[in-house]
Length: 346
DNA sequence: AAACAGGCCAACCGCCCCCCT
DNA sequence: AAGGGGGGCGGTTGGCCTGTT
Image (cartoon, rainbow, N blue to C red; front, side):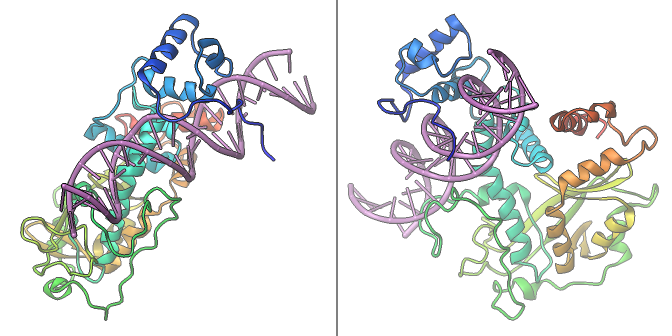
C-alpha cells in the first residue's frame, strides 16, 4: 500500500543539518535554482533525501525567512486566521511574511493551542461561579515547566490531540476554597446593562470587562493549577473582552481570541443577559453565560464564512470587495475571504 | 547536584494534489 | 483521458533544553 518512498533512504543521513550541509545546499541552489528536489542531493553531493533538502531550504535557508520573536500582532493574526482557516498552515503562513508553515504550526502547537485550551478550561473549571479571566496571564499560565503533574502522561502535548473534554465539576464537589462562596450572583440589572450599552447611541461600548473576583485561595488539588493570581494567591482572573457591532454582526472578542459572532442583537443580549455582578463597570458572566461562551468557541467558522458569502450586500459593507473571486477554486475563495477578513473593512 | 518531567522545535513521514507526458 | 512523478502539506516524532523537585 502507498507510494514508494520519495528516495532510497539507505545510506542517507538523517537528523540535524550541519553548517557544512547548509552551505552545500545554499550554494547549489544559488547556482542552479530551486526545484528538482529528487535529484538535487545527488547533484549537490549531499547524503540527504530530496524532501529533506527542500524542507531545509524552505524553512531555514531561503532568503527572507524570519525565525523566532513572533510579535503580538503576528500572534493575534495567527489566532484569527486559525479560527477561520483551521490547520491550513501554509495558507496562514502566506499572510505572515517571512514565516513558514512549519514555524507557525510549531508555534500553534506549543503556545497558542495550549492557551486556547487553558482559556476553555478556565471557563469550565470555575463554572459554578462568576468568572474573571485575565487573558494576558494565560500565556504565563500555560508556561509551567518542569516538575511532575500527577496524572499527566509524558509528551501528552505532542500526541495526537483529541479535543480535551472540559473539566466538569459537580456543584457538590469540593470547589476551590472560597471561590464559589465568595461570589454571589446578583440579578442582572439596568446598571449592569448600562455598562454594556452606550445610552446615547444605543450602541455597545468598545470595551466590556468580563470579570470575576474570588477572595479564596486556589485549591490544592490542582483544579486551578494555571489560573492562580501570582500576587495574592487567590483565584482572581481578569479578562478584557470587547463587544463590537460591525456590519450588522455582534462580535465578542478577547484580546487573544474571538469568542463569538452573533447575527442579531438579541443573541448578543442573550449572552449578556446572563451577565451578573456589575461593579465599577465590570460585568461578570454566570455559569449559563459561560456555557454559551464555550459553545461559541466551537463555532463552525467555515460555515460562518459560507454564510457571509451568501449574504446580499448590506450598504456595501458586508460583502468583500470582489465576491466574484469566490467563483474560483476553494483556495481562491479562502484567499479572498481572508483578504477581506484582514482588511480594514472588518 | 542529580534526576525528572514537560516544553520546544527541527526534522521526518506519508498522504494528496497538480502537472506533465 | 489516464497514469506517474514531483512537490506541497499537515501530522507526528524524537532529542535537546530548562525549570522543578
